[in-house]
Structure formats: structure tokens, C-alpha cells
Image (tube, rainbow, N blue to C red; front, side, top):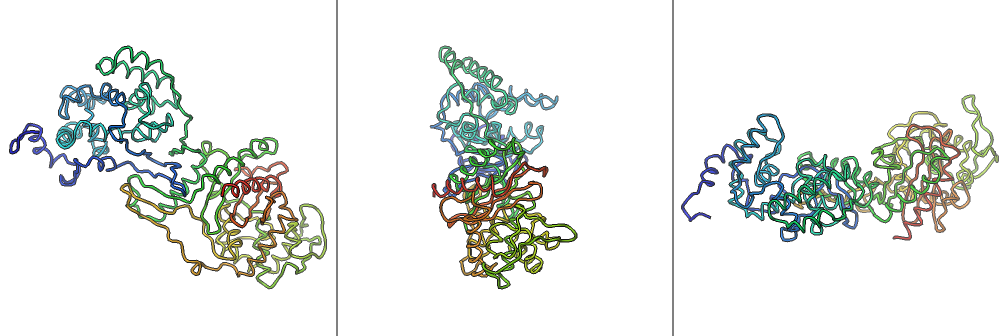
Length: 595
């Protein structure tokens, strides 16, 4: 540093050009705050945490935890300097020869580099959106010396390596090490470090997930540059070039990174949408952290059981898709699998798709009957029925005459359900709306009873949760807390007291329905769902097996299963009491085992 009271040429440059070049008022440039520079003006993105605080995914820009300079491998730092800025330790932020090449390439429309690492650091923090010509001619020449005055060379490398883009949504060396090698940055080998540095000129082109050989060849070129720069011996370089490199399979899809399972992408996307819906646009900048309700053990069980069932039955039974959602009684979503393969299709069959619920919709018909004074022992006719000139058929082609409401629900009688819907059409519509399944339901009593309207799996499952919850209203949610890039809380979910939760159903009405749905699992169409402990639920199958459902609950969890095809093509012999019930049973057994 110059003696106090004197100015060297770097300071004179800074003072002359700061007012014109600074991207914000000079007093706002906290260039001495190294850790602040790590988080300042980051690209937008969200980090998703599970209910236990585990990192489960990132959407948009993925930044790993900053790696202290002392923990960065020496060979990584040497590779960076040898490849990107060989005179880094000699210059004061600007390299006139390299700068001239960079300006000339910009003027002539080429992409040749030339900026020093100091200039690149300034650009990454403050000047990304600025004109290249203005940035290189005016802003970087002024701000780079200021950065050098405020920070040590080690600090500049620390900031740069923890911010720069490495492709695959990864920003910073820690994120890149996890995305490509599933290891901590401090454990990177010489060749792995060289491959990471080799990404910087063209992260997409040299991405090892796209072309491992090209990425490796580029890394070997960086190793040769280290030898040329004198930071690596020839013998060490030859050993490094022979190192084995194992690149982990890509865990990225649709603008997100999911280290544990790509299938978490559906949940992460829904959680981000929920966080955005509950925050102002100004609060969505930078990299936020979203703490969620996700239970990794139950999520893994849901993914595993759905995948196993589809692997065995998809082709012979003509099934293209499936979906699973598991929640607590209060609506906290613990697991969400929106389809068969998140890489193939981002479309979410839990929270986006609207499908005909089939006989699952009989829940509302029977709730309406109970609300009008019916009991499980109330009689209803299961005799053949003609409606609108068309015969109504039971799926088993059996008609038992006068039977109880409980028995009619257990056998999923179509004729009995339509007769009940004819008697309670208005009440059934009101329940469907009150339980947030649909705002308006078109069609007559037959449509209400047979579920020919459309609804989402998440909403239908929440309706069953209201029954499980003794009639209290349930609204599904995923977000518990949102924090800004600095850790300040933007949103904290405050759950209402039980006395403040709206009663959507009479307590007795819900309690009776709980027992009737338990009968469906014990004696009725849902026997395949019986997990060996108390459970209740309802099967559903639409015309020509286009949709098959099982939705139900235990004393602890509520879960919904759907199978079908996105284009509504009929499946082959799939009914709600078959494969969906079996998947539900398997998921519930695992969920209770892990609780």
C-alpha cells in the first residue's frame, strides 16, 4: 500500500472514473466485504430443503456453500491462474496486452477472452448486464484496480471461484464438484480440477455430462498450461493425465438440480410456485432458501413403489403414467411424485393434471347423504337403473336390491350412488365446492355419482384428509419458511390454532364416513390396499379404464394414487381396487415403518 497521503496510479484511475463507471453509488460498493461479495447480486434461484433441513434440490441458479480459500485445492487455484490469467499475481487488476486483445475481439465481434481474473470477478458481481464495449473500455479498467486495492489476491480468487458459472446450473466450485463428481470441492483431483477450469470458456460445450471425452481433453490441455506456467512438474502432469475420472449421472432436469433423486423435481417446482405466490416480486431476487415439508424417506418410498409397479405392469397393461401424493392430516405434503420420469416430462399429474375421479367421487355423494340424516344402516336400492334412456351398470354386473349405505359404498355400487345423488344433488355440489375439489361442477346427478367431472389428485386427497381430520378444512402446502440470500426470513408459515380451522364437515358426519371408508378396505373394493393396520379409503375407475385411483388414509397419513395415460388412452384391465390399491398399500407400509 502507498504511504498515507500519497496516491499511486491505480488510485488516481479509480478516482477519475469511479463516478462514471460505478454500477451503483460508490458508497454502496462494499468491496472490502469478501463474504458479502459472494452473495451480492447473485443470479435468481431457490435452494430446497427437506423438513429435516437436508438439501434436496435447487431450481434456477445453484450455488453451493462457499469454500474458504484455505480449503480450495492448490492445484485448482494453479489451474485457474495458468489457464485464465497467467500474470495474475503480477498485475494490479489490468493486463494491458490481454485487455487490448479483449477490446479488439469485442469490436470485431469475436469471442476471444483477455480480461484478468480481477476484471472477470467485477463483471460477475456487478456488470453482467452491461454493454461489453462500455464494460471493457470504461467500467472494468476503473473498478478492477479498486477491487485490487480492497482485496488480497487470495480474496479475489476466493470470490471468483465461489461465484463463476460452471454449467449445469452450477455456480461456484462447490456446486460444480457436486453436480459433476458428487464430491466436495476440497477433494477434487488434479485432473478433475483441470476439467472444472476447462469448463469456464464454454460451460455447455465442455460439460462432461454431454461429452466426457471432450471435457477430459480440455482438462488435459489445462494441465499442460500448468506445466508451461511452472505450477506443475512434468512428472506430476503425466500422472494427473492418467487419473481415472468418474462423472456421476446427471441429476439435473428442467432447470433444476436434484442430488438425491430427480423425481424430487416435481415437489421442488410446486414448492417454488407456492413460495412465489406468497411473496412480492421484489422478494424473489437472488438465491432464496425454501424450507419445506418434504420427508425424504416417504418420498423415496413413493418413488420406489410407483417405479416398481410401472416397470412390471406398464407395457402389458398399457400404462404410461402414474402419480403419488402423501400428506399429513393438516395438509403438509410429505411426498409428491408427479409422473413416471421427471426428465421426460415436467408436467405434474398431482398438482396440474385434472382427471375424472370416477368412483372416488362417491365420497361426496355419501357425505351428502350422511349430512341429510343418513346412517351406515340406512337402506338404498342397488337394483338396475335406467337414467336418461341409458342403463346404469355396476362394474361387477351384480344388483343386490335393498342394501345399506355402508354396503353400497363398500361394493362401489353405481346404481345406489346415482339414486343418492338424485336425492341430494345440491348438497353434493356444495360439498365438492366446500372441500376445494372444484369451484363449479357441471352435469347432473349421474355425473356427480360417477365422477365424470375433472379434479386434481392433490385436491381429492386433501378432501379425504378433511374426513380423516374429523371434518376440519385441509389445504395442502409444501413451504414452511423462505429466506433471502442473506438468511433473513421472507416468509414463515404460521399454522392456525385448531380452534381457528374451518369445519368443512360436521364432526359426526366425518367420523361416520371414516368408519364407512374403513369398511371399503376391510370388506369392499379396496381390500388390496389393506396394510395390516387400520386404514380407510376409496377406489375409483373411469370409463374404459382411462383413470384408476385409490385415495385413503391411516391414523397417521393420507395418500392418493393415480394411474393412467396423459392422452387418456384406455388402460388394459386396470381398476382402482387393483394396482393403485397395491401401490398405496406398499407406500403406507414403508411410510409407517420409517416414522
